[in-house]
Amino acid sequence: SLATTVLFTPKSTSSFNFGTQATNISASAQVTLKGFKTRDTKQRPGESQNSRLVNIVFKTEDIGDPSHYSTAVFDNSTWRLVAPFDINEFVTTVSFAKEE
Image (cartoon, rainbow, N blue to C red; front, side):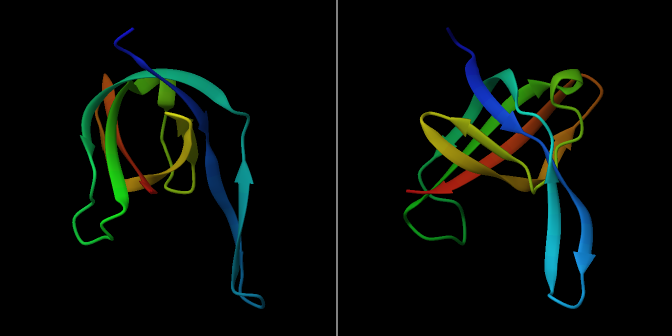
């Protein structure tokens, strides 16, 4: 299959505790999405040589409004989302990064 299967965990900031300087993050239920890789590079600009950056295009109606607090699992690894996201009416391109 040409599509990449992504286990996506949407997360959003619910509050910030000024006393502890901590952000309270709430997670929604995981969803399985299909998307297409459009970029896969071994090093993110300005980051360590052991980092990897992947761009995946999803249907906007499937992924909704992603948050940089969200995480994703694909290629047997957990990835973090990297803003900004390219969102339009039909497709959303999300960049994912991880250290290798």
